[in-house]
Image (cartoon, rainbow, N blue to C red):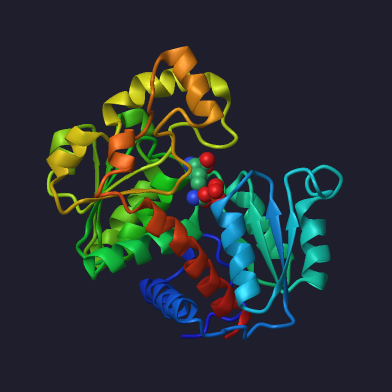
Length: 329
Ligand code: CP
Ligand code: NVA
């Protein structure tokens, strides 16, 4: 498998075999790291990390992975560079492409990262856009495979806001890898029709299934994975909280949902999560709307079925695999 020189912008651009190859490579790199075996095969290379939105996991995963591979990483934060304000994406891409061997971009529209990739002569990696979060997908699939020993045939139920980056990406990933995907939410928050149709067609080839349903009990029964994400994503205005809470509260992941899913089910969340009052936004929502926990209850988040920190760790191993594969092993 040779992925040298490729961009990593969305999972739709990758074949199932290529996706599985990246997950295998991440597993190998994870073992190397645990065994203390050095794997600094990209020494002398440099990567740029552009973040127009904030991040803990993705930024740290890229930085640690780059260092482990022997590379230097330069972080360009939300207000630290000329990007978008004084310099277009096309110009930025051509400048950074002359200095760096690879560029990570986290920001708003998918078209921005696609543009960056078009104009930069080096691999560009999507660290999250409004539409997709592909590096998160590899970490999630590695985590599921570590837990169940397989991906094909796994039933994943995504609850909450399914029309944003996480719902979209999980639907595509499940369709690619022959998994059973259900978006369990109100119709307003179903993934966009065109993407759903693309995934349904893909599912016919891979043996996957794509279901959209408003019924919690029916959807979660027999699920292997219950997945949720925040109800208001980065870049969305605070005003939408009220409607989101009203519409999505029936889709909160709580004890009842996990019981209906059954003992073998695991709980996943890309994080950060609002599961208690230990965040500024969590407290703000509590003050305004009286909720102490939002998309997931603290009991489930901290409970025995939760694998959220394995998932977070796997961000680093999988991002390392993407950089290694695309920069040339
Ligand atoms: N899951 C994830 O992307 O987390 P960060 O926003 O902290 O990078
Ligand atoms: N949907 C969330 C994902 C965070 C990793 C957001 O875009 O803010």
